[in-house]
Image (cartoon, rainbow, N blue to C red; front, side, top):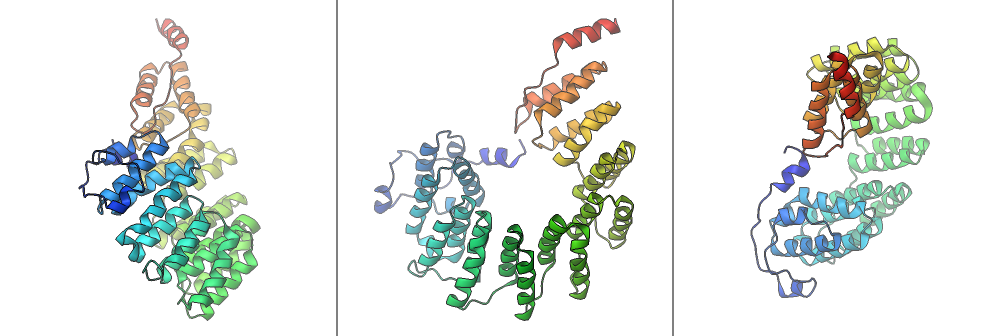
Length: 398
C-alpha cells in the first residue's frame, strides 16, 4: 500500500499521557489509549470526533501530526459536520500549544479548509488573550483561510482592516493571497492595482504573483490579455517557471495557435526548464481537439521519453481516442500505469478499455485489468469481462 491514505493506516500507537482534569469534563471518556489506526478506521463521525479529542488530549506528539489532522478534518468538512469541527478545535484552545503562533496558524487554516472563516477570524482576534503573538505569519494564514473558504470578498476586507489596525509589515505572500482572491472575483483591475501597491511598498513581485495574474487574465481575456503580464515579468526581472509557460502554452492552444505553442515549447526547453505532465497534456489535448490523433500520440510518447509519468488528465484525454482508432496496446499500457500510480480514474473509462480488449480477443490483458481493479489499494473498481463476449470471442478463435 503506497497511497497517502494507505500510509496513514500503517501508523502505530502514539505515546499516552494522562488527560487533565479539565479535559476529562469536556469529552466522553474512553477507557483505553486510542491508536491512530483506530481513528482512521472509525466510520461514525460523531465517534471519530470523540476519539480525536481524546487522542489530542492524551498526546502532545499527536497534536503535531498534521497529516492526520488534515485527513480527519477533510472528512468532517466533506460531510458538512461543522459543529464537530468547532467542537474539536475549540478544545485545542485549552492546550499550552496555543501560546505558539504556529499551532494557532494550523487551527486557523483548518477552519478555513472547513469553510468556517468566521471561526478562523475569531481565533485570530483572540490570540492576544491566549498569550499568542500575532505576526505576519498568522495574518497570512487568516487571508489564506479566506481563500480556502472561497470568501474572496472578505479576504480583501480583512486585508484592508487589519493591516492598519495592527501595523503589520506586509509580505509578498500577503499581497499574493489578496491578488488571488481578487482574480477569483473577476476583479482584474483591482488585482493589478494591488500589484502596483506591492511595488510601491518596496516589495518585489514573485513568479507566483505573476502566475496568479497570468492564469486569471488568460482565462478571462484570452491569450492577448496575458501578454502585457508576460512582458512585465521581464521588466521586473522575474524568471518564468514551468507553470508560467504552461499557462501561456494552454492559452495559445485554446486559441488554435498550436504551431506557435510548439515554438514556445522549444524556447522553454532551451532555457533549461523541464516540461512536466501538464505541458505534454496541453499538446495531447490540443491535437486531439483538432482531430490529429497521431500527433497527439507522438506527444504522449514524448512524455514517456522525458521520464515524466502520465496522470489522470493524460488518461481521460487519451483512452477514448486510443480505443476509437484501435491502439489497444497503448490503451492497455496506459491503464496499467494508472493502476501502478494509484490514480483515481473514471470507472466507465476503465470498463471501456476492458470491453475493447475483449472484442479484439486480448482476453489475458482484459483479465489483468479486471484483477488490478479488484486488488487496487486505493479504490476497488467493479470491472467485468462480460462473459457472453468472452465466450463468443473464444468460440471464434476455436
